[in-house]
Image (tube, rainbow, N blue to C red; front, top):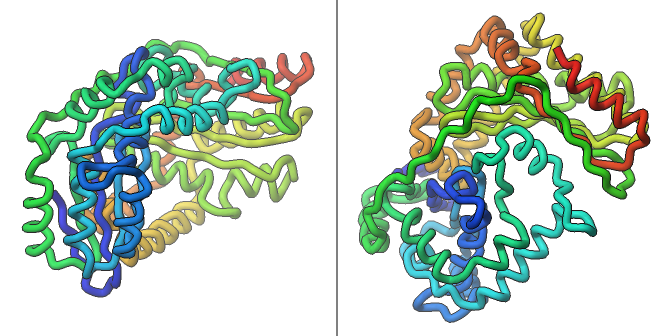
Length: 412
């Protein structure tokens, strides 16, 4: 358990970070973590329905939130501090004693969510799901978080109960209280209310293999007005010494409209409206990817620009101006975290679960210490042909499809 009191704030936040997600699943039970997340908010021993449960929290001024990621789940609650004990009691019930009622109703809701990632024939069209599958193959990091229509239909209450019993334990999760709280009172209340949470053990994760030796590319035809592109690379994980440099690399590429991606592709060349980069870390691996949504005929041009941008930074590294701006903007974001109870709970809860920087200032110092040479070195490590995966989802003519494939497979 972690307590982060902040007397200057006027709200409190509670988060529970759990080692659960698609990377801890089998192919047959893919989507179980996400399904369970939904079912936790469908009532408890004291509340017969999702509506009663939500109403009880909202009458206390609270807001429940939940999300499932590849390697962790987040359940959180923001609320007025004077209602901490009452709201935390409901939150503890949600985590420890879900009713698992109305499963078919929730199954129908999740089905709608999954359908957003499929075409009319049931084929996967989400570029992030496609790039992860292309990169990790049959390893669970290549599974979609929501699972498939098939796995959704076959899962039942017994599967969800087993998954809950395995993952929602004290050893496998971190409870964080942050903001306008008294730490002594908070610890006493939380210890009493979460006392029924089983001790359990940390659920182990299997590292993904490193079998890719050449660029990989996948095109999926889909009737849409634009083509969605991804250029993805394996990257350092959470505990890798080069992780802070990879974070700075991401920010040099995409952290505002003056950074390399937007400035070059949008401002200078007017090739598209939507371009971005993302860096996702796991305990033993990571993914850094670039994405753009473009007119079909411009897809090869934009993919070539993406390849050239990452090649340039691997060759030359960032400029001093880029590095200075990155440091300043990270400093601004650090202040925003300190001024936000929800952000504090999220930062400290996830940091404790992952075993990484234990304070906002510690993370700030990690970023400040990154040099231009370290950014160049990590870029050279990441942007290599044996680690690249390219994806295009759209409606392309044959010449465009061939050009895209040649660009990705010819990446150097």
